[in-house]
Length: 277
Image 1 (tube, rainbow, N blue to C red):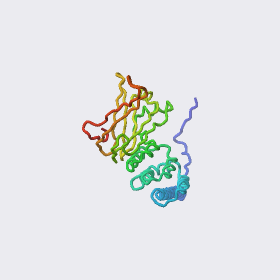
Image 2: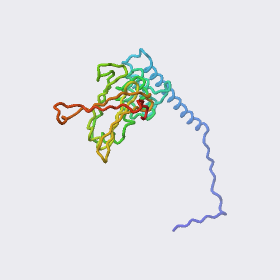
Image 3: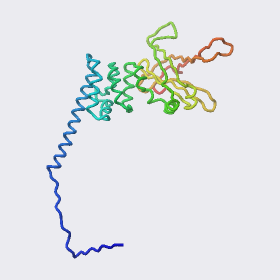
Image 4: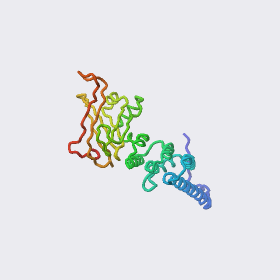
């Protein structure tokens, strides 16, 4: 083992003066401040162009994609995605106004630069779809996937199961008496029985009459019975529904030579359906 002895009486080690140039520090701060200022200007410019795209009535459709791509090129990918999802235009996101003002070209371009919607952005887009009764955009952007049962989403992915087909038609298709508040929804569930047996629960959402509706199926593990119910999501206004659910038969009933659908009366007990009910 090597031992080093220190003698307090020996001469102290030489001292060194260390100095940092104030000019050097100020120079680095100036460069950083300049870069921040440049980034802010680019962000403000991009937001101004986006505002024009989603609000100007005579904006040329052919210019939408090139301008949005140029805005995306001027900012880091994460910053541009954050800019699009921030409520920075009249307390809503740019995507919200693209839906409300029916700027489909802009909407399709915007989503190319957003890997995944934030919860706040998704909530804003759901409000937009309700505001203009836009079921097509709701399905296109998979906005129902954020609130439905996560176990079913996972099993659907593992099964390679495509998205369910949900079509909403305004008007009364079930009787002669037509009424403007009536609508008809056609559901095609992919791998329905397999998914229900795996997840024990299946939920889907759709937009109709300015509300987001929920249709739920539950399976009782002990008895093997299936239960079905429907409701409306948060932020939807209460309603007095007169609903009927028809489930198409896939085989003949005993004693019948035609396949009759199962018809279920879905009216609520007190007549009023509120969000979460």
